Amino acid sequence: MSSEPAAIAPSELLEAARVSKAWPFEEARKLVARLEKEGRERTVLFETGYGPSGLPHIGTFGEVARTTMVRRAFECLMPGVPTRLLCFSDDMDGMRKIPDNVPDRSFLEPYLHMPLTSVPDPFGGEFESFGHHNNAMLRRFLDTFGFDYEFASATDYYKSGRLDPILKRVAERYDAIMAIMLPTLGPERRATYSPFLPISPRTGRVLYVPIKKVNAEDATITFDDEDGEETTLPVTGGHVKLQWKPDFGARWAALNVDFEMFGKDHGPNMGVYDAICKALDGRPPEHFVYELFLDENGEKISKSKGNGLTIDEWLTYAPTESLALYMFQRPRQAKKLYFDVIPRAVDEYYQHLAAYQRQDTKERLGNPVWHIHGGNPPAIELPVSFALLLNLVSASNAHDKDVLWGFISRHAPDVTPQSHPELDRLVGYAIRYFDDFVKPTKVFRAPDEVEAEALRGLSEKLGTLPADAGSTDIQNAMLDVAREIERYQDHTKKSPEGGPGVSVAFFQMIYQVLIGQERGPRFGSFVALYGIENTRKLIARALAGEDLSKS
Image: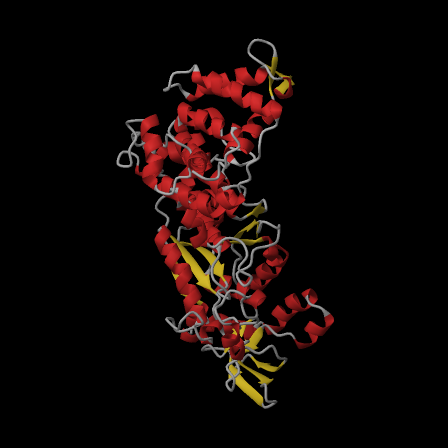
């Protein structure tokens, strides 16, 4: 186990933070400028929004994780200035459609257009409502991951009166807000639009109806209810809610939000949110617009569709830190979010962690692990990569950790589950991931004559090496075999002796024939871990036409 990296001196940290090109620091410096312009120090409020119309997905987690990264960067730049992170749930929204991933869709049909916190819980009735259930699912994960946040429910804010002052101001500035909104709407929508959505006192539904009168003096609205009866309600106390665009701007003004990020789908409306906030005497927060996550088919992931990965699904096969890394990387670039991305994210996390100990302060602040761990990443030595573990499971058909540890301990006698608990954790993840995703897709093929001759040559060459040969010696031996075979000579590359290099087709063949996959990590490293004798037996079985999918 490596020693913990030395702590960075505060003065050195501040100097590096002021020039770091890591995106959280770039966003944090905007907040520093915001406070310096005000000329005063105060609590800085970070906010994230969540629509609990369905179960929270990884995109929801990503928004909180990324906002936390900006918050930590800001605290590094302005130590001592208090900050808060408010996770705001828009749970008073009407349920406009029934999600696909609930147990019984017909159960929810009578509750269409009712506030989510008035819709019964379809998941066994443990919670007060559907909204409460989805809020609990979000909080459960945020708590598990250890985020420092405050949770806020729109229903609570509306009904408790915390939003009453801003709702009265919306009534007072009604014409100004309509002037902002109407140009953004089509002719039909424009004819019936109002920033206020009354909640029917008769049916409990959120109503999209024309507002006949807005009385700013007594803060009421008048409209025709669903049965046609003219009704007057106060805009305060949870009797109405705001349409989603005015709700954004009004909340920013009411709570004095300093920073909020949102997905690209909100980007075109950002100017509308800002204009409404200003019309209500607020100052719009600093923004960060991130790209959307896509499923394996390139479609936007959706809570109601249930496509893409859930938080629990990712964490079944990989540690939370790998998920945080995926959130940190290229936030302004659209990325596919499905099971195939997990192994690479796992290995990249540990590569960054290993690099951190060798880096200077400036490099460390650009390293994702600084942001993932709030400036205090652990020192973890990982002698075997996740990709190698997956190949080891594949070749050995291991179904329990003891089998894999037998190979690992033979290769590295000083490495045990007790000395390397992080590796032990990855062994368990590798077995689960292989069983669920790799094994069902494995396709072995028989070698042709050239390939069979290459494999026989490889086995003979490996037989000349000592049993404890290192991965580099094994890799060089494999290259020596391939260079003698015309099919695998790559004349665009040069060998150390000046002859042709080796084509990747050689290694692709090995993986296809011996492992049943198209590609994998450095094969010499795999052989060193699996064992030379075991690899030769694997080659012999392939040449004999045996079914390598079975142990």
